[in-house]
Image (cartoon, rainbow, N blue to C red; front, side, top):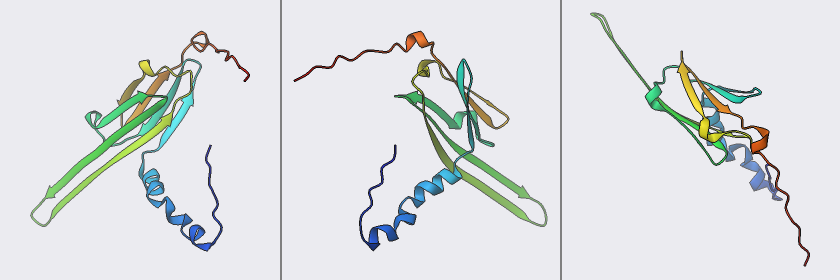
Length: 138
């Protein structure tokens, strides 16, 4: 749930489009992601071309899955006529909220052909027992 408090007057509303510009820009530059659910697991795939396995970190804790990475690439060409040098560096971070039946202790990830696939197994419903809360008066 997102709450936005409206303040009367011109000035607060004038700067609303710029308020979260940095966050929007970071989201735009983050790798594309897909999330899917199956009977036995949740799967999240991220497009990370050119990112090495050692430059990616996947963590699951407190109901969240965080994927961080850094792209480093350098290209250099030398010929008799010209010299070309290009470098690309950048880091990214994506965060996903996990459902209650996600098993954070059994998360696995694979990287193949520039696509990172994270698999989060689902716990059996027996492990998600409902707990009745006693209400007291007074």
